[in-house]
Length: 246
Image (cartoon, rainbow, N blue to C red; front, side, top):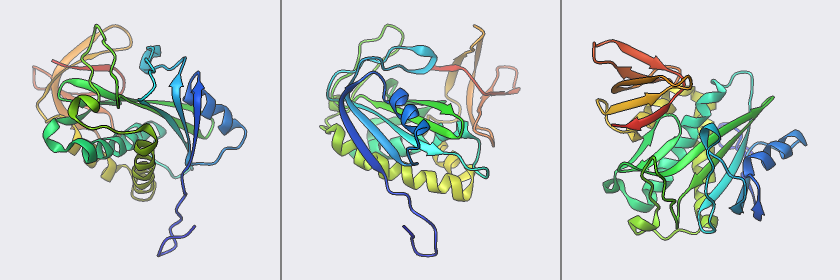
C-alpha cells in the first residue's frame, strides 16, 4: 500500500489465541517461517510469560499480552532502540485513556509507570533480522510484587478490553516505527524523553554484574543510552541495568 508521496504503509495483522506459553516465543517461531513485519500476536493468557532478566510475568485474563514483529533493514537505527519506539507508542495509547494528570511516565529501558507504580513492560528479542517486541500491560489486574509497586488502568478508572487496546497500540507502534525508520532515532528519542520522568529525578541503577550506580536522570544519549549525573558532577552513560526511582 502507498501513502501520498510514495511512502509505503505496512498494515498490521493481529492474531489472537486463547492461551500460549509466550507470545514472544511463538512470534519468533513464526518469523523463522516467514511471517511479515507488522504481524501481531495476542494471547488472552500466557503460561510462561516473562519480563527482563527472566522474571516471571503473571498473566490473568483481562490484561494485554502481545508481541509484534519488525524486520530489520540495513539502514535502520540500532535494533535495541526499538524499545524506545515501543515505549513511545505505548505511552501515547495509555495517555489517550487516562490523561496527563495521572502521572504516566516512561522509565528506561522498557517500563511504563503511573506515578511510581509499574503499569506495563516491554521485552525485545531478536533472531537474525527479526526483532520481536513483547508488550504486557496491566489493563484489569496488577500483581502484588515484593520489590516494586504495580498498578493497572482499571485502578485509574479506565476500563479497556485487550482487543480494543491492541488495535490502538498497533496503529501507534506503526506510526512511530515509520518515523524511526524514515527520520532516524532523534524524533523518537525526543518524544520518549518528553514522556519520561523529569530530568533531575533521582535514580538507582543495578548493573548486570551486581554493581549499583546512583545519580540524577539527565536524559538519553544520541544512541538511546541512559545518562546519569553523578554526585561528583560527572556524566555517566549506561547501556544496561535495572532502574529504580529513589
